[in-house]
Image 1 (cartoon, helix red, strand yellow):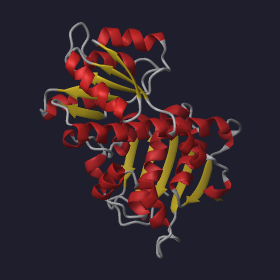
Image 2 (cartoon, helix red, strand yellow):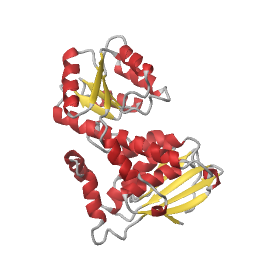
Image 3 (cartoon, one colour):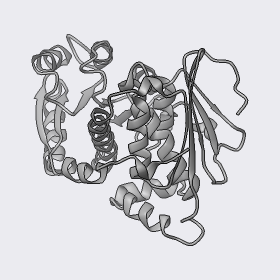
Image 4 (tube, helix red, strand yellow):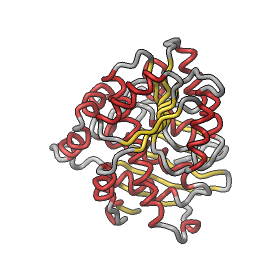
Length: 321
């Protein structure tokens, strides 16, 4: 058994360094006025923007330098190449598939939004675009970019002998420890970059929503005000919370790789979050479990209460924990 504090991490320092760099954003829309409105709003947030007049031009720009942009704001309906085709091409490209896409659409029909979500779009704006909603969704996309970059840095620190790990148990308390452990464990998988964000999301959920009892509504407000991590740190030091830990068990079996995550909270209604509800597509968080379920793992198994989840890569039979 290991305490995650013994896995050295500088993730808090790297988070602060990454937040100082503006995001590089490609705005794709055939409507010149809409491009200008979105560009002005994102520029006002302190980020760098470039524009494209349709999907074909956007793909030309993306293919010219696949590491140039952090976030794409993409109109759904455009001539020459529509937004969903751009999404399909990006998801088929290993260098572009991880870039968060914010899709703007004039349709508010849940079935239309669901088509985008099923294609891999986890952030949505409906036209006419509300400035506050754009800001809220953009904050969430920025957080995803920062998490990906920080986790990849951690991933590079651990590169040897992970194939020797067949079973290990860890205990942790904090968000930084959750992110460090995600990067550590990801190296045990054949495709570390596939699972790393999913691991971080599930373990982080166990800390914030489990042991610290931060509700969905509370987090919405905390993220909006930019004080989420400050509130997490405050609750970690409250009487009754300081002793709570998250237990993470990793097992490598012949039939698959398993991670079991158990927190000391009261659980939650996990069924609501396995897929993104179109009604929550414009919220500033709430995508982590759905993304882990759709991208990182072959299966998620929650207990009835919701304070335990088993994340599985490849088909597997039930384990007796």
